Image (tube, rainbow, N blue to C red):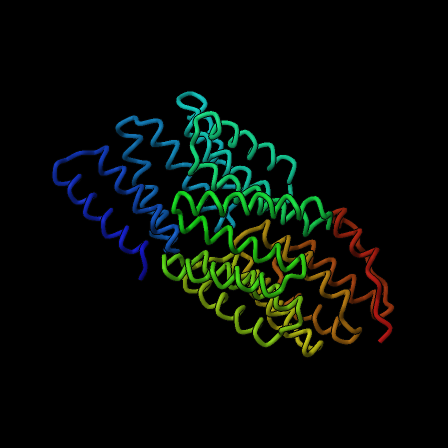
Length: 381
């Protein structure tokens, strides 16, 4: 199953030896290494259990630096799985430990905090965390750490570009990812290479260099398949599918997205699963604008996380604005059957009444939902 599985076998042997000689520090390190390998492989439940077991052991032997490292890994895992508030708590605990011990350990924590802020669309705060991490890594001449930092900065700039469409953000994304790729090649770090190639695949698509974009995606997929990095591979399928949709290659896009959705279900990658269903909804709607089943599945799947659920609500409101009048009414009725958020339920009921020309009330709606309601233009047919 790839190089990562080979690494797991080695770590399991090391753990067995540490247990045999009753080396508690060695056992903790073995558990931590296995957790890191399983996280990359995509076995997140097992990874979290290993991290928690390692954390308990490090607390018992009072190893502060290892506690900080483990908490940072748990936080990174929780970012990927969409458990953002839990991630923040663990990362802040980790940073507090490293502020009392050694600055080198703070690098990964700062990078993970930057990643968390990026997915929350707080880009300036994210760049501040990344810069602090980069300063420490540069001062200590830790090139492997710089690879991850460059990749995360590049991805954050790409996310910022998606938000504000400024060319400067796209240029920065390209520059940082190219730096990450070159350094990853020099240091022979294939996982980081795959991440760099994927982001560059998106960047080159934005520059309308379609063939170059597809080449980078293909190279990225090849690396992740070789490594057995299931989560990163599934994520790459989704990012490629998004570019295919924009290029109106809908059949291939649908195929890639379904692969991602399948892998997300199998690996319990909930946040990725929600994004897959949203994209499948877009693909199907482009071909038949009376179909919205995948959108309902996305909302039902998003129940696992309040922030992701809320974000999905606003994405669905955006989709409703493109629908014809009758379809919108049908979609609202279907949404009301699966929705669990009280304010969104009020929004849907009021919108249905507004479309039908009946009396409605939006009293008590949060400001952002009220603005969406006021700005909602009803289709003529």
